[in-house]
Structures are given as structure tokens and as C-alpha cells.
Amino acid sequence: MSGHVALIGAGAMGGAIGTRLVQTGSPLVVFDLDAEKVAAMVALGAKSAKSAAEAARGARAVILSLNASRIVRAVVFGAAGVAEGADKGCLIIDMSSIDPESTKALASDAAEKGLRWVDSPLSGGIPKAATGELTLMQGGASEDVADAQAVLAKVASNQTHMGPAGAGQTTKLINQVLCGLNFLAVAEATALAEAAGVDAARIPQALKGGRADSAILQEYMPRYVARDYRRTGRIDNMVKDLNGAQDLARLTHTPMPLTAICAEVHRLLTVAGLGGEDQAALMEFFKGPPLVSVS
Image (cartoon, rainbow, N blue to C red):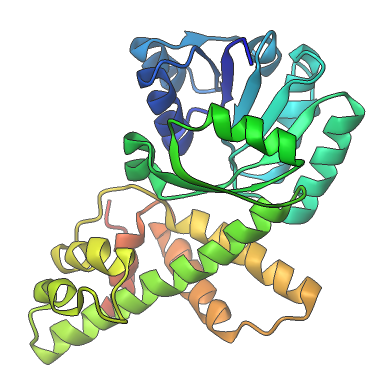
């Protein structure tokens, strides 16, 4: 494939993806409503565009990193959107985390305009994007997914084709259920260890390699202990994803009692003003009311 890669959405995650692409030699054109975010990418070597349509013009692939399905639809099919500028056959890679049903509709509408669509949500966050070790779960036609995997080869170390359009987003919801429950379980265990007088900072090493071990335990229990709330993600984004999982559960008549509890804890923290904080701020829940902002 020839041509540049367009990036629509240069927020925390999109910016990390774009940074990695530029650093590994991909010609990148960026569009975002936030001029400062675009300027940061330009400083790294990307080019800027004044609209999504301009960014997509002549692109071999367009990467979307956005917050909601309605925003994805507006950016692609709205005025000065991707569909307006992209050549026929252009590959749209949606790395946003949105619901599977919306993704199926978006992919169908794109096909009607001669555009290809791959949903490619991610796991690993900003740290893994920086090292090119993201995990991607992808939905779409086999040949389109293969092309998307080539575009994203320097960004991800694990890319899996899960099925047709929407399958990647379904897999991401399952990923978020597992992550959300694990974040909360590790926070709860940290609170118990601290209350019982055990040095929680030593627990990750003590449990390393055992059945209770996990990447979240190793990364986040030390952060929970230190109350290290630096932002690498957002609690309110987890709320969005757990809401999506619960919507899918209702659609498929799947009971998910633990997910419901986990979602409520995240909602409580969001209402308390902590929605913009990292998952590390789950420790604030265990202080008891009143919850206060950590900013």
C-alpha cells in the first residue's frame, strides 16, 4: 500500500499511537479539533490537516481514535468527513472503543461508499503504544484485516482477527470486563492488606507466577500502595466500556452480576468527580464517604 496514514483524534491514546507511527517511519497526517494536540504531533514530524476530509485525501489508511460511536459517525460521514476526502478502497481502521452494533452499521455504510472498515480496539494503553506492544482485537474482512495489521505492525505486538465487523469491539468489551474486575479486585485486596497490617508493596513479588498473578497486579498494586494517580487512562472511559458490556449482556440475555457491581463502583467514583482520574484512583473508594477529587 502506498500513501500516508491519516490519524483522526490525537487525544491521549490517539496521540500515543500517532507518536509511535511517526517514530517508526510512517508518514502521518493528523486532524483533531484541539490545535495543541495537533501541534504536538507536528513537532514530532507529522503533518496537520484542517479537516478529516483533508487528512484522508490520498491516505492509504485512516486511523480513528475517538470517544463514542456518534462521534465516529460524524467524523466519517459528516460534513468535511473522512468519506468526503478518502479515495475509493481506502481502509478505515477504527481503534476507538465503541459498541459492536454501531460498528456493524458503520462498516456497512462505509462499504456503500466504497470504503473498507476494520474495527481494531486495543488493550495495553499508552505505555504499550509507546513500545509498540499493543494488543489489538480486530473485526472485518480477512484481506482488510491483513492490510490493517500491516499498517499497525510497529504499534502492536499481538493482533488477532476475531471475525466480521463488530467482532473486535465485542472482544474489547470482554477485555474490559476482565480488566475492570481485576482493577477493582486488586484495589480491594490492597485495602485489605493495608488494614490488616501486611506490607502490600511486597504482595506482587510474593504472588508472582502463582494463580493470582496478573499484569494488573504487578503494575497497579504498587501504584495503589503509593497512591500514584498519574493518568494513563480514565475511570469514566471504563464506565463507558462496562456500560457497553452490560448493553451486550442484556441483548444476549447473559447474567453478569460481578460486572454490575464493578460498573456501579466506577459510576460512584465518576459522580464524585474522579471520572477523569486513572484506575489507580479506585483506592479512593475504600476511604469511604465523602469521596473527594484527587486533582
